[in-house]
Length: 323
Ligand SMILES: N[C@@H](CCC(=O)N[C@@H](CS)C(=O)NCC(=O)O)C(=O)O
Image (tube, rainbow, N blue to C red; front, side, top):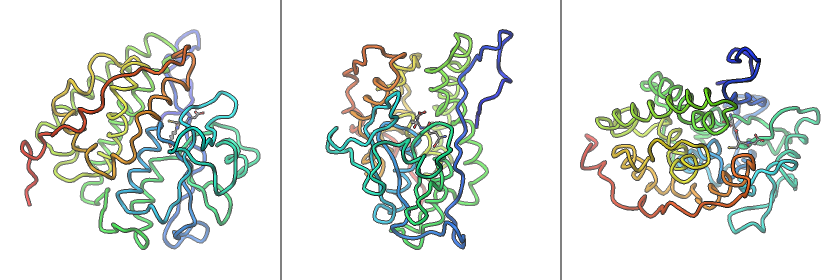
């Protein structure tokens, strides 16, 4: 995970590339933990539908069947300069208020947990209603907790998204996908320099080429089992043509232009647990309106049509899963 450091500065001490600040709340809900044991109705997720990091968590919550165990609040999809992510149930029928803390926005949640907190006010946030503190604000760790620590309460406890025999390969793919794709699109969009953008752009499309080839012989990223590696690639692929291609200048190719990636994306999108986490209006509002420097008029692009995602895919016929 990248953080703020000076190792990639140029001679003028001006950063060449976008550096993502590391998440600060890193406690774990664990079976046997004194402070944060798994419990039903104790933990709450602060989320929105624009953010790809939140998307991972909503997907794992659905796949494991934890909707009745971990409650959720959904913010407005637009990030405001001063108030951060606001709760605005009037935005549309998908946004909510904060029924747990009655906060007006996400920064208030961080300050409730730690009045001295300095840092980004990001989502997702996993909140402990009992101790009134943030447990964790790092999606990669929240999804691991949801996968393994709540099985006692989950509707699908048998589903393991990180099976031990595949963990090394899942971690390897996750690292490659995080660096060059998940965070790679942000490195393109938020690059402070042409050089940084050019490097991130090449790494992004080289990695997409590599994944395209991999998916020619593998049904999923790590063979014929759907794993956490797929959960982590999907949020970036589904946002790509509608947002990153335009707003972040990731415009060598669309995902639609890669036969395997596009068919794979269709297969994943057509899984109800994944599709129900996707709201294209929120995704586009998030990317087209949250950073005025990238889109000063805040006009949201109308296209592309997303109906194509519901058309049949070829993954079953191309790569049937051996029973
Ligand atoms: N490493 C974090 C990143 C979370 C993140 O960057 N979330 C964005 C939304 S996509 C955010 O809340 N940004 C608000 C801000 O930076 O002020 C994770 O994976 O959970």
